[in-house]
Image (tube, rainbow over all chains, first blue to last red; front, side):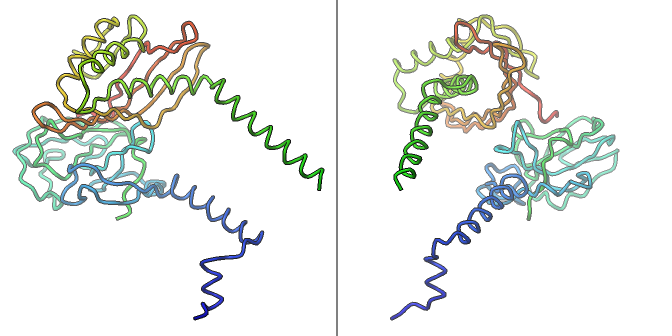
Length: 166
Length: 166
């Protein structure tokens, strides 16, 4: 049975100069896009469960905060020295706000916050603290973990590199 | 045709020369990165590690540091100046708590602010299993200062950067 020419051409294209130029352009675009704009990552850890499950795959969209600042209850990616390792956390308070945990409930500026994304029981207690200028306060959704074993706290907005695509 | 063949041979010789030169005479950046690779290798521990390898690694770790080496950490109790002997003892004691340990280094950015001084920013991730079976997954951003003495790079200062401030 003869394979139609168009299908054969799709899987086994002729190495013409035009085709090679196209391959180069696609490669350069893909490199730039997936390295600087839409960084793929795998989730390791349970601190954002049940919203983001351990082992899940997502993309960090770096243009998310190009013209705006992260706000409650955005999920953001916080970088360390570079983009190879990032923390996925939820913003619970912005600069100037007073944040605290009382009996597992989040309070911002003294008022209780309804957190629809927190599904597991929580007994956290954390004295009130003010979020510094140009910072945001980020916490994971999984509050069933002991308070000592979760990475959370205030971080500079400069460290927020974007947000997950979904 | 003959001219083309000569040209191709010339280009191949030049490329081989460049690769050979880069391998035989590594750049200062590569030399600095090699010290980090050694640190990662010697800190890491496999479950099958025998006593001899363990002692050798502990001894080797201290050779990477200048005497004294300064550690700055958000946790004040860890901050201070350490001699090679103290680093060896601390490494030995810390490693003995783990049955398995893996130090991974990401996003190494090397700069040379002064002659014979290298400043390296990186993300260090320590994944391990303590003797009781509990999993450990620690991530920190580090600012390291290395000094070149007798053509070798040594760690002279390590600062743990606080990314999230509780």
